[in-house]
Image (cartoon, rainbow, N blue to C red; front, side):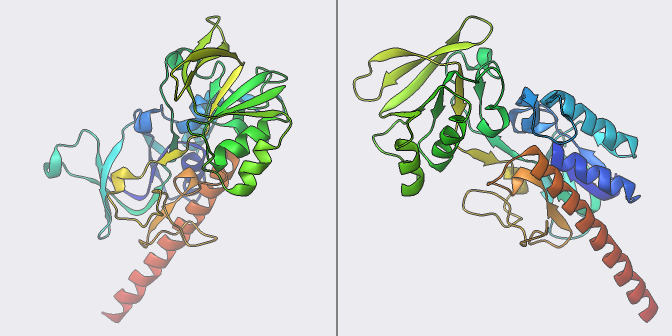
Length: 330
């Protein structure tokens, strides 16, 4: 299969790119993945319950519902959506080559495209503690900004796991809604910057639990009601009553399938030319959390997807102009 534009990823970035590309008559093909990065098509948004900060939905909307609407809008304008995962690519020459996960080595013909938008997102790191599967999104989350204002957490005690800037920042954010916030730090010091560490340590609604591991999530079979803590030194355990647990231990950008063909920073996020979606390979564009490790919001990902589609459209126009110029010289 060949397409002018192919998009890898199915979150707000991927679908917004698809909507813009389709409306520009580029007939995009979007690979939404099959449990790519360990999550369902739609990405991290599908793991969020109530989304209350995406414009246009004053009553709120669930992450899954928003994903479904994005997908429906992509298809409405002619995007071809394929529920398969791209496992490797060859970006060394045009057209770019993409192989699906079930491809039989080099013997299978790859899909090809003139422009490629990478919108594979980043997966929140989790500890997979006991009870996590049962209480995920029933008191457990990996995004305080996304979920912290939900009724489930308002005026309730919460715990954040982590010791870096993200943990301090998310704990401070949660104090707007929680009755109290605990930060469980596995060591005896923060890894966070001094200013972030001081801000969290000095906040009257934050208690730091040093040398502490959270080893189990427990509840009433409906929602989380408490966690089991373990002292890192003595191994003693105790219960802590909380209505919410938030992981703040980082994200893993889903870039392994690129096999180093695009420039990344030290943590694996794609690097783009500032103010654009352009990567180091001409014709390849990045959108969403795969390059944004700061904001990581559905709305910023959508905006990034728009940028990538517009950049891709301009690039394809340049290719066509170059081809016509070359033809006129013959």
